[in-house]
Length: 159
Image (cartoon, rainbow, N blue to C red; front, side, top):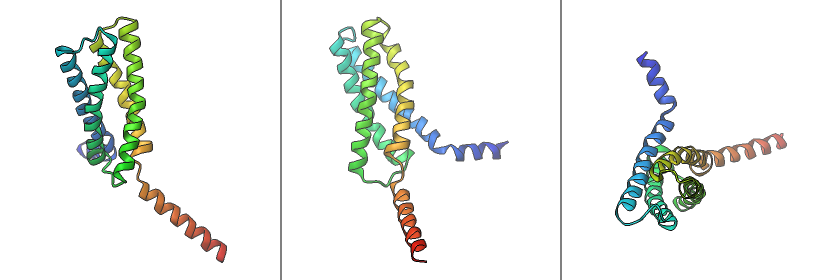
C-alpha cells in the first residue's frame, strides 16, 4: 500500500507541486484582494473592484512565476522569453477573471469574495494548461530530438 502511494506521488509529483504552488498563489491573490477591499478600495464601485483585482493579480503572478519556474517545472529555459510568455498567458486569464467578476458581481450582484474564490478554480486549471503545454515545456528536448531527426534523415539519404 505504501509502495503504491509512493509510486503515485512520484508519477504525479509535478502536478502535486503545481497544486501546492497554486494554493500559495491563490492565498497571495485572495489575501491581497481582501486587504485592498477591506482598507481603501470599495468592491461596490466597478473601477475599484477591478483595481483590486489588478493589484492582487500582479502580486500573485510574480509569486507564481518564481515558484513555477523554480519549484514546479524546474525550468532551464531562457528567463526573459519564459517570463514574457508567462505574463502574456496570465494576462489572458486576468481578462477572464475580470470578465467573470464583472458579470457575477457588478451585473448579477453576487458576493465579491465568493465570486473571487470561485473564479480561482477556473484560473488554476487554465494557468496549468498554459504553463505545462506552452511556457515551461522543455525546449532542450525538442531541440535535441529535432537535431536527431535531421541527423537520422540525412543518414538515411546518404545510405
